[in-house]
Image 1 (cartoon, rainbow, N blue to C red):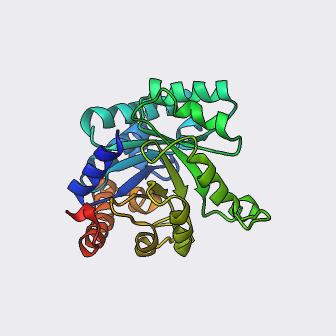
Image 2 (tube, one colour):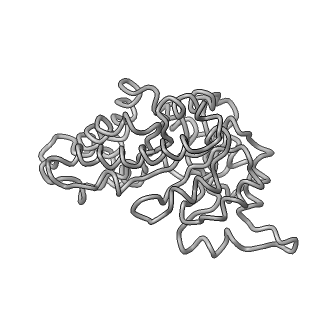
Length: 280
């Protein structure tokens, strides 16, 4: 999916919500455990219920790999179901890959070739030759680099400064723009970082940002938009647990739809009240 197609979907739906499919068999409604493929059954119901209110889905690979072959089959079926029934949805494989060049090439072939997702989260620690294999030869696909996360351990590395006062996350963003561009590279920035979105925008003024942490993790959508939104939105705000696990009864999909609609309505109001071209 191209940047212009993604923006068109955001404009049409007046939403920039990404629903995280972090499907845990210990948390899904018990009646689904009787299904032949409980993970896919849960995902399908969540997708059908929430698709009108979001523009993207983000399956976290850890929740599928944990169940071996069956889990990966559920992931593959989920991606195929989205592509066949909701082709306007932007599909992000949250796999946080990144390794030496030939290994990254295989990861890219897996996710962009075999599974045909739109985007893949990538860890940038090993530098250029571990990232560019996900970009080169993959037209219309996106790398989403980890930049500034919201976990406690982010202070160990991401916020450390060099002698010039540049923090590591700023160096990652600045340097990576030599490898990709705003048409094929996004950045992960945690919603709980608030005003630090201003610092992100100084380094990456036009890049799309994938923003986890709104909802169960307590991030503020208003603050994210105040400091991070740009003319064509430039945000994909992810919510996982607060939507998909809002209810554990047989009404779980209906409640998930209600929660997704609440967030989407909030986003529509922010867009409407802004002066950004996304509203035109």
